Amino acid sequence: MLYLRAVVPPPISWGRRAVFYSARSMRIDIITVLPEMIEGALHTSILKRAQEKGLAQFGLHNLRDYSLDKHRRVDDYPYGGEAGMVLQIEPIDRAISHLKAERDYDEVIFTTPDGEQFTQPIANELSLMQNIIILCGHYKGVDYRVREHLITREISIGDFVLTGGELAAAMIADAVVRLIPGVIGDEQSALSDSFQDGLLAPPVYTRPAEYKGWRVPDVLLSGHERKIQEWRLEQSAERTHRLRPDLTGRR
Ligand code: ADE
Image (cartoon, rainbow, N blue to C red; front, side, top):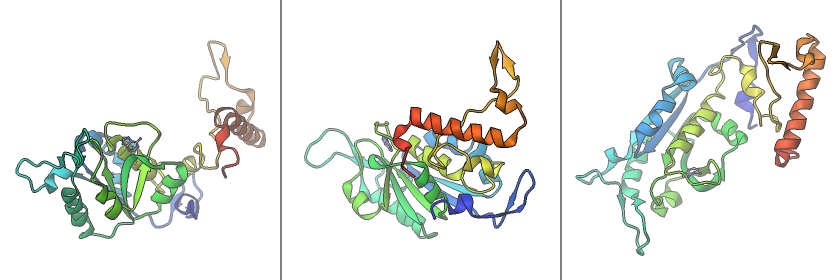
């Protein structure tokens, strides 16, 4: 089921660029204190085109716009006297409530290093959704009541700590939106990504066939389709075994 959007819609024309049934749009609203940190990622290249094609919609919301403080403050000192500042619940609740009054959301995600590890299956799962909110963590964290009462899912992009959740939110948006049918030109290319079938992708080459004496593998120049497919599968299996043995047996 996780792969429904990426796999199931059957092409109605089998031309080089397949046309898919019912293109529909996904909306991602991101709440952050640093919208400028994400803006470029959402308005460049493939994500920009996804919006132009009407396949994705992004809303970037500055948390400070929801502050009731005259200086637009959204953080305060933690109870108990620890170092660092904590994002307050009130502006976050106001931002999320404002968005929820406009539409229903499938998930309200919080980016945090102690969340579940983001993976391709999670990207696939999120790409099936209609509307999601991503709240970017910042500073020392957020008032824990946000996580207890307002958030439906917590996601980490890896076991390291960023200055905030903005880059994580941009990465999640990128990985998810590129899976929406029609966003990348050739549907097959999202399906043949590393991780989609639990294997790393095989090597790819382009012209020239020889450069400084370094040759493209002969099989790729042979025109023999079955042998090429076999070679790709062998390469994927070998690279996965060598570089990411932890993926073996995960399927
Ligand atoms: N915020 C800070 N570090 C993070 C991480 N690794 N993943 C998600 N959000 C984060």
